[in-house]
Image 1 (cartoon, each protein chain N blue to C red):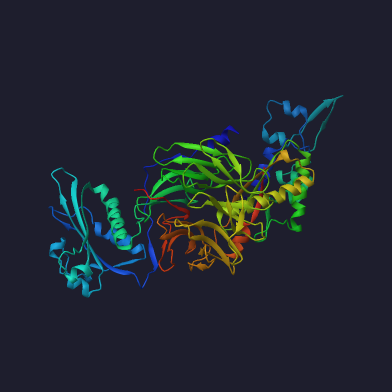
Image 2 (image 1 turned 45 degrees about the horizontal axis):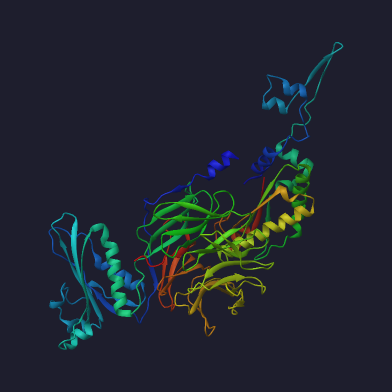
Amino acid sequence: MNISMIAKSLLIALPMLALGACSSSSESDTTSNETNKANSAVVVAENGVETNAIDSLNLTDEEKLTNEYSDAILETTIQFGFDTSVLESRYTKILDAHAKFLVDHPTQSLTIEGNTDERGTPEYNIALGERRAMSVSTYLENMGVTSEQINVVSYGEEKPVNLGHSAAARAENRRAELTY
Amino acid sequence: MSLRLLTSLLLLLCSTQTFARLNILITEGVNSARPIAVIPFKWLGAGEKPKELARIIADDLRSSGLFFPISIEKMPKTPSKSENVDYALWHKLGVEAIVMGEIKPTEEVGKYTVTYELLDVLTGNMGMVGLSPVLEKRRSTLTVSQFRNFSHRISNVVYKKLTGERGAFLTHIAYIAVDYSSPYPYQLRISDYDGYAEKLVLRSKQPIMSPAWSPDGHKLAYVSFEMHKSQIYVQDIYTQKRELITSFPKINGAPSWSPDGKQLAFVLSKDGQAEIYTLNLHSKKLTRITHNRVIDTEPSWSPDGKSLVFTSERGGRPQIYQVNIASMQTKRITWEGDMNLGGTITPDGDSLVLVSRSNGQYKISVQDLVSGDLRTLTKTQLDESPSVAPNGSMIIYSTVYKGHKGLALVSMDGRFKANIPAQKGDVKSPAWSPFLN
C-alpha cells in the first residue's frame, strides 16, 4: 500500500478535519462541487465593499494529516524480530501519532493485523501473529485509546507482503499492520 | 458494512471443477525396496486398450517406498495368466512377486471385465505340489471411469498380501492452494493421495487454513477468514453443507477431530492467550483444556481418544506436551532441539511425528514414544504441517521446493522421499484422509 492510499483510507474514515474547513455559505452553495469546496473563496458583500478570502490552505490529504499528527501517522507497519512480539523503540513515534489520532477521534476504530514469517507451523504462527498485534494494542491502550476502538486479527504466515524466502523477505513479513 | 459482507461472501462451493494434477517427483528411493513385476494388463477386445492399470499399480507400489517395480523392458515375457508363467525366468531377475491381468469388453457397451492375479515367484519356482503360487485372484466388472480407483484397490490387495499391513492407496489428501494471481487466491482442494483427480472444495478471497478430516472421511473442518476474522467451519465434502462451528473473538484455529468423530479440539484466544478447548459436536458443550499465560496450540488426538498432544510455550520455547483428558494430567514429551511443534501420534500409538527445529532448520522428525529417541526424516527445510497416512506408512507435509511452497512425501523410516510441487502458486497444509474403503 502506498502512502497516498494510506492517507486516503485514513481520511475516508475521518470526520472532516478542522484544518481548512469550509464556511457554511460554501457548503450550501448549490453550484459547489468537491473541488471548489476544498478551495472555497467566499465573497461577502457589505457596505459597498467586498472582501474575498484567500485560499491559503490548499493542502493535500497527507499534509493535513501530517500537520496535525506528524509524518509518523502515514506509517502503518510495525516490524518485529524473529519469534518475538516485543515492540522496538523506533516505532514509538508512529504508535504515538496513531494513538493521538484515535484519542482525538473516539468513534474511529482501528484494526491491527498481526503477521509472521514462514518459519514455524501455520498454527503456531497464528498465535504469534496475535501476540504481535496485542503488543501494539496494549501500547495504544496505554496511550489512552479505548479497547472498543481496537480490533485485533492475526493472519499468521498466511498473508506475506514479500513472497520470497530470503532473510530480508522474512523480516518484511514479520509485522503488525494498522488499518483504518 | 453490507458491502464488506457481500464481498467477503464471494466464495464458491464446488465439487466438480477439476485442475491439472500434482506430480510426484521421487527424490530419494530405497536400495532395499523389494523388486516386483507389474505386467501391462492384456487387452482382449478390439482396438486400443481403454486404460492401463499396471502403470497406476506400479506407481502406487513404488511410492510406498517398499517396492521396486521393474521396468517393462526388463521383463522376459508379458504373460497375463498364471498358467503361462515360467517362474524360473522371474526368479532369476530377483522378482519377488508378479501382478498380472486381463481386460475384456462385456456385452454392455462401456463396461469391462477385469481379472487380476498376484503370484509368489519363490513358491512358483519351487514347484511344490499342493502349494499354489497364486496369492490372490479376483474379477470385477467396471466402467473406464472406475479403472483408476480399481487400480488403487488392486494395489491395496497386493500391499496387504505382501506386507501384512493395510494399503493406503485409496485415500485422499486435502490441502490449501494459494495463487495470488487468481481472483480467489485461497482454495481448499482435495485430490487422490497421488495428486490425481484434484477437485475444488472451497475458494475465497481471504485465507483458509488447517483442513482436518472427520474420521468417516465425509467432512472437513477448517479455518476461514472470509469474515475478516478466523472462524472454524465444518463442510460435508459430498453435500457441500457447511456449518459454522466457532466464531469467538480473536483466534479460532487448528481444529482436530476426536477418533470417534464426536468432538473437535481447537484453539481459542477469547480468554487471553491461545488455549486448547474441546467441543462436543452434539451437545455443543465447550471445555477448556489448558490454562496458562503462554501460547498453547496445535491439539491432536491420540488414536485411543484419551489424550491430546499439543504445542506449548510453557517451558519457554515451543515444545510438545500431552494431556490426559479425564485427569487433565499434563506431561512434556519432547526435549531435543530448539523447539518442537505440530505433533501428531501415529495410528499405532507408538510414535510422535512432529516438526523439529534444530540449528534454525525446520524438519519433519519422528520420536519413539517409549524410548524418547528422536529421528529426523527429511533433508528439506521449512517443513511444516505433517500428516500421517492412515496406515502409518508415510507422512505428507508442506515444504519449500524451488522457491515455492509445495507438498512432499517421506516414508516413516525416512528412506523414501518425494516432492509434489504445485503446478502454479503454492500448495500447503496437507491433510491425509482416513481409509475410504
